[in-house]
Image 1: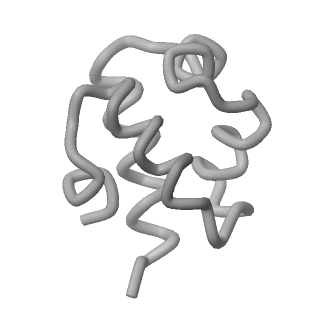
Image 2: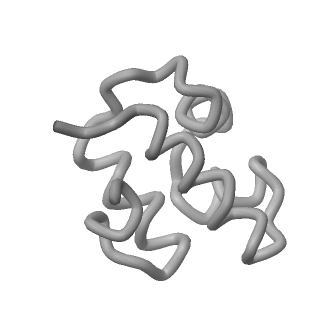
Length: 68
């Protein structure tokens, strides 16, 4: 089961490691900025697989790395 807290921390940590703003990552991933913000805060408890794939691709990692 996907841990929402892990996902939130991972997205933020990986984004910051790449020195990307939330807005820039959202553009790279082709997702709405508010979706990314909600992923980072844990408010989006069930992101779609497509969203996870897009964010992972923009961060140049696998979905597994994103959610683990």
